Image (cartoon, rainbow, N blue to C red; front, side, top):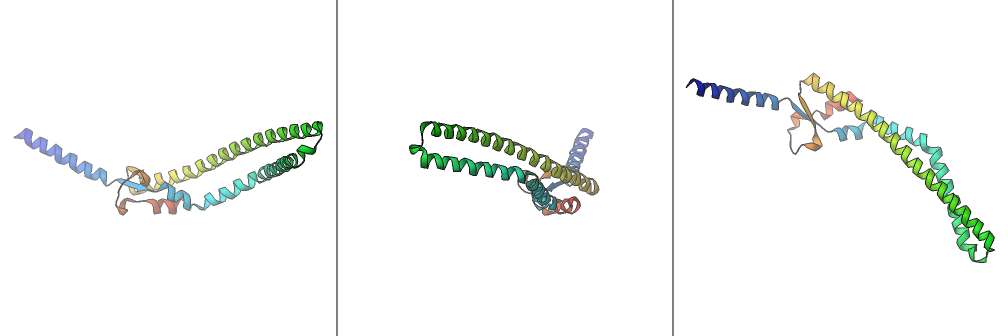
Length: 164
């Protein structure tokens, strides 16, 4: 009988601790917070400004390349062989330069966007930790990973207020 009472006590204690633990779980929509952050728009403008001169240079190279292609198509049949070969060689060189610069531009742009995204996500993560500690949550799960949760355990708005 004593073992039965002890086993029942353990089951009750486990059920109570599971219930208490479930109450300390919250969800947060990190994507929503990220999208609504004013800093995100400021970073986008900063990056646009940072890469504007290179983007303009690429656009000018592209226009020059297109003009040379058009000239070759239009006048290639009537050009002297040496003149056409020279234009074709220039075209190949310009195309290679454009491709190299475009690839480098894309890599640099992607890298910088990643750096800035990481900074913003770190701010969000710090705010989540702060709100979770303040509210006594043991676990905070991204809302996109949860099939269902009561609104009462969603701390998105609290984190959003703090992260600004």
